[in-house]
Image 1 (cartoon, helix red, strand yellow):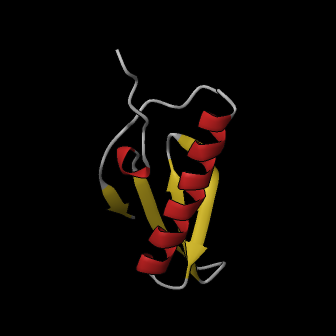
Image 2 (tube, rainbow, N blue to C red):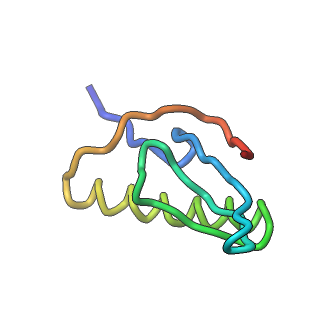
Length: 77
């Protein structure tokens, strides 16, 4: 049985506005240490996707455990 590789589309992304930073902040519940930001929700989502993609690449390349997928939705908070 071949194991399928999880992608960024398998994980929930939350985007919220930060008054303190005056930017949109991206957070992934399954990856609490992966964060990104942007001036618009779209920019933040793109930066977040890049950051999560890199995190997944590193986990797979090093043979580390990859968190189970949690959702396929984008949530604006």
